[in-house]
Amino acid sequence: MRVALHSVLRPGSELDYDREHERIPDDLVATFARVGIHEWTIWRVGDRLFHLVECDDFGAALAALADDPANERWQAQIGGFVDRFVGGDDGGPAPLPEVWDLDRQRQDSSRSSSR
Image (cartoon, rainbow, N blue to C red; front, side):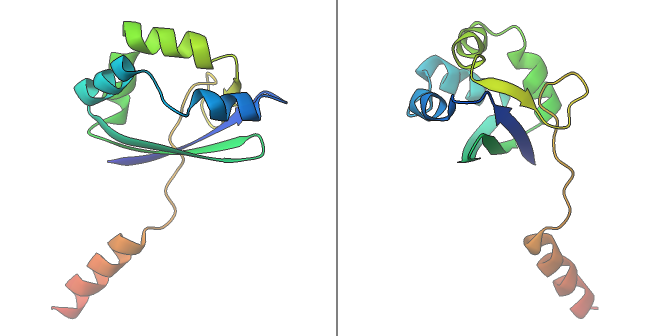
């Protein structure tokens, strides 16, 4: 599954956030693999971050990360830069609703034309 997230940085922390993400800890990379996160890409525009996560099950991955030592260390390190995630009731990550997908449209069109 693909999940898009939107978060906001604290004012003035943009370059420090970028620097911290030049390379994340190897133990966190291993944890992501263990919990079914296959890819995580982040784009930044000003203080806005846009994440695309490819994973088996986002909710299950978040639950597994909640008490994982590698993730706890990373959150302690990176958490000071992030003001909030947009859309989550508790300020945590909440997937953005998908509006449109080109690949899905192509697949739907292909199925319709083959009938």
